[in-house]
Amino acid sequence: MKLTPLDIQQQQFSVRFRGFDTNEVDAFLETIASELEDLLKTNKELREELERKEARIGEYQNMEKTLKETLLMAQATSEQMKKNAQIAIEELKANTQKEATFIIARAREQAEKMIAETNSRLVKTQEELNELKRKKIILKQELRSLLETHLRLLESSSEKEAREPEEKPPSES
Image (tube, rainbow, N blue to C red):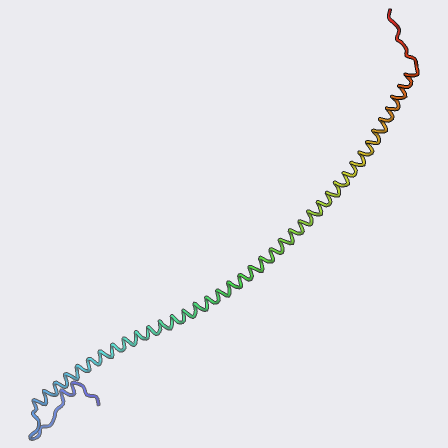
């Protein structure tokens, strides 16, 4: 059975012959009751403080748990972001490579087309040049032939004039 200060104060002892002085016993019991009351009050305060501190410890443990979870989540998120960034980089590289390959192929096609057109123009120009050379040769031949014909006419005309006496124009008198 737990004793309370009130139990001590209300405790009655039977009086016997040559017993204790009741006033001293009562005073002693009062002192014990008062000290027990102080101890119980202190004990209650300490329990309340302990409960408050345990509650704070619980809060700190919850915060620690939350921080750990947050840290783990942040690490996981960071790792996922790194993976996603790496995947994005690889995709970008692949797309860039495809684009570059496509652009190079298109440029080659255009260059080949330009070369073919240039070669075609070159052949056409060469043919035109050959045609002009041929026409030049023909023109020279025709001109030479014409000049030779005129020269022969001049020579034959000069010979006729030399063979025929010179006719004098009638004199004017």
